[in-house]
Length: 269
Length: 360
Image (cartoon, rainbow over all chains, first blue to last red; front, side, top):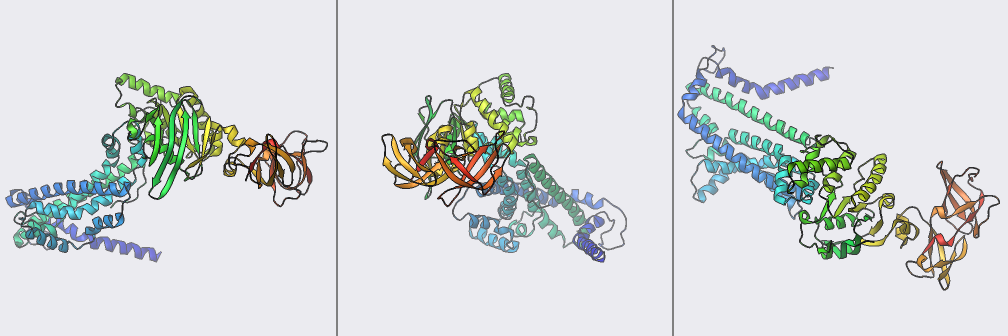
């Protein structure tokens, strides 16, 4: 019994350690005072209103949304190619190639960021939101592959053969059979890549030039203590958005498995 | 055989160094129920998939309705397939599955609905159209797969181990239903199976395959009674083998001396693999008879019962003929008034050379 109690206490402490800092975000976002300290001084929506009046913030948000959307579409497309190739075909060096695709998952982001910066400057390209997209696609593709692998590997090959056998071309087979069955995986991949790109800081910091993303803009505002509550307000919105997207992604993934009558074998949540 | 609908001409298939099909030549008649029977890895599924167009062949030719099929993709071939896993589209309803192949047909929507309903009726699933496909049982999936393939009225229906995923009772029921369905629609069925009993029950003709070659192609009765090789004899049903010597030639065949039984004449068609001085004869358990008191037979041999297994309708005996080391299996129908012999008992065994085949 004591063993169980100790474990429970450990679990609670563990979760506190993980999430207590995040709970501070909404707490001070609604606090009527510029100083980040207890005791709290009262409820206000002023910081959220301030957000709507900051033009640079709007530009950064727009940048982030463009980058996240482009990244999620590109990474998901690349992930589909890789996942399908991995599930369908045998070719020399397959293990190595797929491993290489997954490598950015474990590479330190700062290394990726610096390397990309060096390469881009050597190529004479100027930094913009598109260089950030390139970097984000690199780190998002492994996630897309991991999610889509499940969808494509779980797809019975004879389903596609049956469609061809019944008169469909390979292209219409993909549209009528393959796509509907992997759609939940695709949606999940889009949402997760979008979230990762939206939150990503290091690569965006190095590659965004004078077009900051939301996290980069946030970081730049840390120099002004008076603006700290605004950052907390923004952070609150971002956390809610991220959690919402992740939950939506997982719901789609599970619904897809059910629809195809498959067993749950992976996923992130 | 009727007019051939499928002609296989020296079909070879290599996977790298692996020789999966080794020169298959066969004609399959229109309206036939034809089975490809063999152990796993014998190339039967590869051959079926080659006919469907899912596998390219390395050399040789496949003709369907006298048309060379090289370069013709599966969606342009007059064949349809029932897959081993049934391949029911899980995101579509039963009716949408069955009507899938009609998407490109010039029929009106009303005609298509009628065709789907008829196809479902034919396989005994009338009224199931609106059901979700993933909610069906194994047997129902099987029927949907059949209806979906037959709705296009193919010249040939290909069935890849369609009954292997069903339980025994359902399998037996489907065997009869498939046979009935085939007679009803008159379409050529080609069935791939590893179950010899299933092939014997359902087929007009059977091609037995080992290691990418056809070992024997004939009707079920001939296959059972006159296996062309020892291996075919072992694969189809149960067969006893006894050491034997061919002695003198006769006008119709040769004299054979069977260890433990005696000497008799075999006809040429009982020596399918050619003559050799020494070899063995194969004989089915039901072709040997244990004689009871007072019964006589033209050819008798003495033997000892070693083991018996009682099945109710049948009794299987392991008996050792005099002068032989091993035992042979004898099956006897249990008739009223007929005693079951016990181990250790000495019995007389009746045998008939007409039920034997000699293998070198």
